[in-house]
Length: 118
Image (cartoon, rainbow, N blue to C red; front, side, top):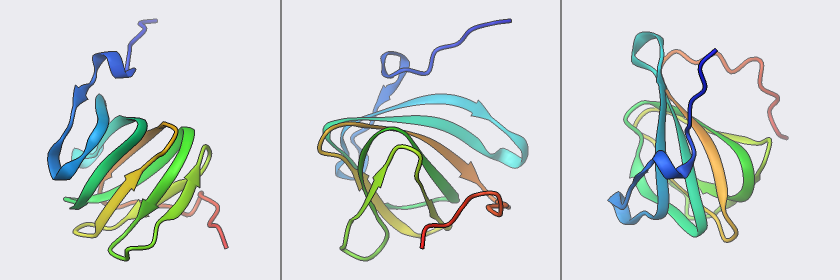
């Protein structure tokens, strides 16, 4: 067994697109160019409004915050919930209290195992 870190201490601070309080830790490259990263958002942190370069699944593993697509309305999100954006979709996310999310970026998603919210 080998142990690894993906906490904010080994991540890179990102300020693109007006982002703030945002650190990303690289986790893995997968099949067909897919990548997995961990996003650490400090209290009042924001991942600024931008277009995805590929499909993206945003899985909240700690804390709570908000997400949005092209529309200006924010949707609350918390631990155990996920957001999915298609390639080229405009999106943004943030938090008042702090949030950690696993980001899986790639193509050819099969989301049939996830339970959609009504």
